Amino acid sequence: MSDKANSLEQKLPPSVVKAMRSFMQTGFWNKWAEATETALQEPARQFDPEFMRKLVPKMEAFSRYFSAEVRGMDRVPPSPALLIGNHSGGIITPDTSAVYAAWYGARGFDDPLMGLAFDGVYGVPGWRELMQKIGQMPASMDNAEAALHDGCSVLLYPGGSYEVFRPWKDRNRVVFNGRKGFIRLALQAGVPVVPVVGHGGHETTIVLARGERFAKLLGLDRVRMDGAPLLFQLPWGISSPALPGVPLPAKITVQVCEPLDWGRFGSEGADDPEVLEQCYQEITSIMQVTLDTLAIENPRPLVSRFLRRKG
Image 1 (cartoon, rainbow, N blue to C red):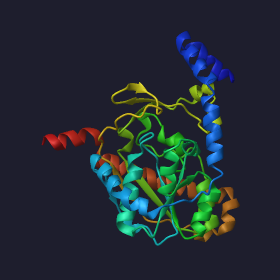
Image 2 (cartoon, rainbow, N blue to C red):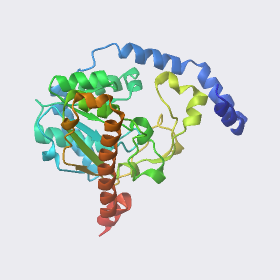
Image 3 (tube, rainbow, N blue to C red):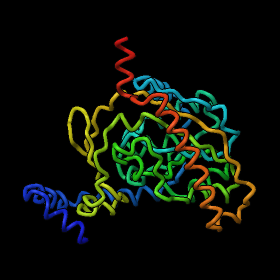
C-alpha cells in the first residue's frame, strides 16, 4: 500500500477502515478483475443492428428527459471518421446516449457508430452484453484501429474516467489530461477527426471528488480504475458510482464541430512529438471554446429546465 493510501487511511474513522478492509477481504475486486480478463478475450466487435433498432427509441425517450439537443450531425463526413468527445455525467453519461440516438436517426443502422468503453464494464454480466450489442468495445487503440480500417466510425472519449469524474468546479472544462493516443490513431488511420462537445451532462450528477487516493487504498487498479469518485446523487446523497442514483434533468446540448483534417502530417506524424502536441492544442482549444460558448448560452442547465417549465 502506498504512503498516500496509508496517510488517507489514518484520516478515516476506524469503523470506515474496518468496513473497507472487510469488503476487500471478500475478494470482490479479484473476482471482478478475473471476470473482466475473461470477457476481454471475446471478440471485440459484436454490434447487433436489430437490437439497436429496438434500443434507439428508448435512447430518444431518455434524451427527452434531459431535453437533449444534438446540433450539426450533418457535419460528420462519410465513415470512417473518428469522433472525439468530452466525457460528462458520471456513470450515466446521458450525452453519449443523445449522440447515439442522433447518429442512427441521421445515418441509419447500416452505418454503425462504434465506441471504446471502460474495460471493467465487460466483467459485469448484463452490462457486458448491452455494451457489446450497441457497438462498444474494450478501450484499446487496436480495437479502434480495426474498426476504422473496416470502414466504421468510432466515438472516443480521450479523458475517460479521469474526465467523466472531474469535480463539479471543472464541469465546464475539457480535461483530456494530456492523452494523445487518439491523435496517433487518427494519423495512422488517415481519417478525419470530428470534435463533439457536450454541455450540461456534468450537472446531471454532481461529482465532489475523483477519489484517486481512495482508489489506491481499495486497490482498484486491479479493475483498471484510477479513481473511487465521491458523488452527490438523488436519493442517496453523498455516495459512489457503485450505487447509481437518479440523474438530475439538466438541459444537455451537444455541438458537433467542423471536421479536422490532419492528413497533411501523414502517418509519420504519429511518431513526431511536435505534431502530436500541435494537434492536441488545436482540438482541445476548439472544444474548450465551443464548450465556453455553450456555457454562455445556457449558464445554468439544470435551473433553466425548471424555470422553463414554470414559465
